[in-house]
Length: 187
Image 1 (cartoon, one colour):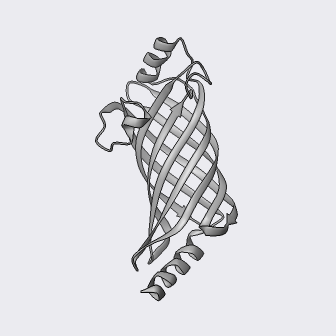
Image 2: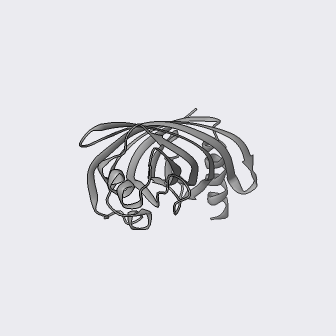
Image 3: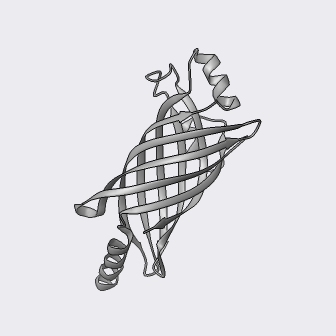
């Protein structure tokens, strides 16, 4: 059993560390706060997100920890259409073996997000806190899965979160949250 785990770790470790990647994802906004949004069955809004992100990984540390940076563009739509851009450093734990056929990565992306206009829910939250959601903190925990036979492709599940961090930015507590699913191409 040790040799099976070692061989899976080797292929996952070697193949999942790519310097560049592109992720395309989409999802639906939730009506709750970030804590409530961790529940995959949270109440959903009528606003959606389609987005793409470019990631560059710079440093591979011991224990399969990889540091990098991400920039992304998104289109938010529902009762109108709005743009979003974000930039953030990233940290991922890569190559967690899932048997002999797949591996998993756990990642965190944390930086800043700017928007052209708020969604209806963000506008309501701006009113409640006399705030401004144009520039907020960006936080996105994610899980990614890769199959041994397709090592350059990952299925990605992430929480797309914008927040004022208890009034630190824009006098906002909560901005918006999205359940998102996507695909990442590592090259």
